[in-house]
Length: 252
Length: 192
Image 1 (cartoon, each protein chain N blue to C red):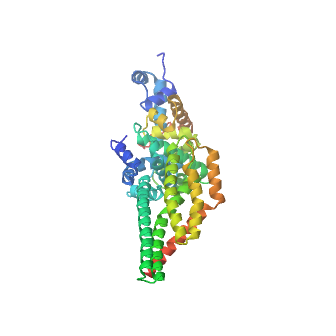
Image 2 (cartoon, rainbow over the protein chains, first blue to last red):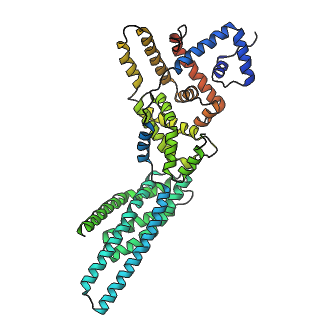
């Protein structure tokens, strides 16, 4: 017997990874060579013992439990974002319609003198406030998510789509944000208007990020977000808006 | 790839969480087994399963449709398990060892020798596994326990064929060195 399988060849043989011709030659050899047969038995004994170590099987509801844990951690669905933006667009259109209608109504009632102007203005302001609050209650959380993504996403070649998505989203948030900012000024919501103005500057920068954005672009954006405390401001205003919405609901 | 994985992956890519849930239900147990072998603790293995699937969901756009989803997932899980064990070095005593050591002194009466022997060898296997390099351990676990082929290991661990084979060879040699004193010359556990 001139040929003896090496240890590596025996390992491949054990796992069924040896080529067919080597496999049959090895089988024939093991039947004839006592020393190789002994080595083969030892390999089988060791690997057989390893196989016998049990892994405790998780319980019956394992998949359900894991899904409950995993689903909580999944990021927002992009389709959800898309539909959310469609909804925002509709909301923005509604806002324009309501504000336009309200202003027209106020003008007409002032001219006709049918109602005292103060009452008319109060009614109109309430309606504008509600619509603005509703719009911002959608707009600000989406802006917050975008800012968090900017703080955590790298414009790497490995994920080119991630920044494309951020750019597109920022562009859409700029458009709707401008409308809300104008409305906020008209309704005397100066704090909100100023915050939206600060936000707009950063969103414009994100939307204008070049395709070949690098660390310097991202660092600049992050520094601006941090220096202006934008995430804090967005969260604070969003929280204030939720409170005002609740008060309006309870006062009805 | 499971025949329905491709469809589920395509739906999950469009943001369909129900489709992703199917993938979790289909693959979480095998990922758990791999994670358990890597970490040695049930709780850690569950954390790794969770992290692996969340990462897979975030990166699903990068999955190439012609690839095997299970193999791709193994790769993610393997990386998660390596990171997990590295960042939690304080848990350097796998649960199974603790359990085995607590169990050993209680084994008295008929068959106690066999149980003590089983305890010793289980402990030795866990120790031997923990002393393999990350690459050797992953390649060995995938080949030995999960039945992955060398090609699948190459894909999962991003290795060339020879590197994957040699990772398995080195792992088996180390396991033999650690276990032969216990195993050779004794009847197999199945026979015992």
